[in-house]
Amino acid sequence: MPMKSVKKSDFAGLVKYLADDQDKKERVVYTSVTNCESNDLKAAIIEVTAIQDMNTRAESDKTYHLILSFRAGERPDDEALKAIENAICEELDYGEHQRVSAVYHDMDNLHIHIAINKIHPARLTIHNPYNDHKVLGKLCAALELKYGLERDNHQPARVGSENRAWIWNIMPGWKAC
Image (tube, rainbow, N blue to C red; front, top):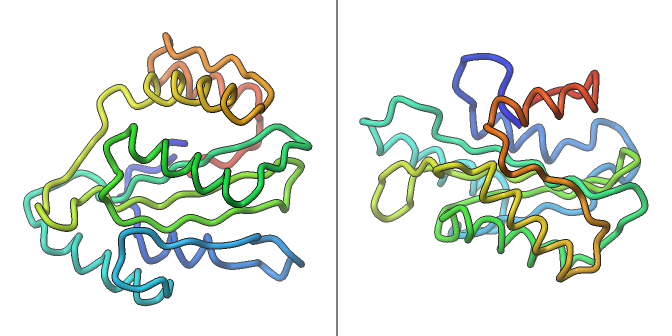
């Protein structure tokens, strides 16, 4: 989901939001840290923000926020969720990048938020996936088949702005991140 405002995202703020149960019982099913030295969220935040600060050339947002949403009633197990997350990050060329994910079931549908550091931890270069909406559309269709999930019409032929408008129209009130 694209951000509504022009301001750049704050990795630390995003991860703190993702890990916050907001006084709801069992909002966050689990959190996961990938490609960081520690599995601790606070340590991951420090590590990622330090890597982001090392890249002084990039002027665009250094955090990629992805939301994977499953149909109501679909509850893949934790192993499948992690495999789906890994496949998506690999396909977007974020496989080596640091990320924090959180799985929620506080709404009608299970969903995963993934906060990805767009700065490569070794090369310190920024990565912006080309045509990510098309890549995600094709990949999600393949993952639905592989994991026996209900098929969706991802419309990968649309441009990004059309997909964003379509999501807003079918999910009015949905807060774009």
